Image (cartoon, rainbow, N blue to C red; front, side, top):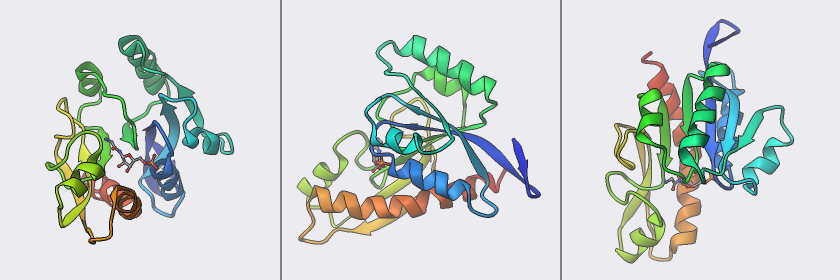
Length: 194
Ligand code: GAR
């Protein structure tokens, strides 16, 4: 933990795969007054992730692991996380599946944001499936990661109304906006209890 102006901030790593808008938002949040986290490290499985372009303009440490040899990569990642004394991992658009062993080592300390109202629409292509099923509502969920995909304890959810004009792209934008509000809120909620 890092002590900053009277409050303890949890050293946090963010894992990304793509655009990194949730990552950017969490970095912004970490710099706000009384934020409970400090972003110390970012991991991407994709060296071309847009999020990496942004990180190059910051002082935040990052590394790329392509997860082609997941067990090897995870061992190296665990070493880095231990060395940097990381207490919390926030998955933010991270599209790789972590092993049971990795999740066990960070038991209860990995959070994920998923663009649906879990337990509905776990997995990929969420918005496409929601639109195809003519759902009236979708949303986003922040949950603790356990060994089953998108199934851990829910911390917070936000419901979003789907309009008749929405397609998967417009819905994804609408939900992403809400994700940016929900992730910081969920972190505050979870971390106020420890
Ligand atoms: C977000 O909508 C996030 O919820 C989703 O990927 C997007 C990443 O956007 N995550 C998943 O689908 C995880 N299964 P971002 O890179 O701009 O944060």
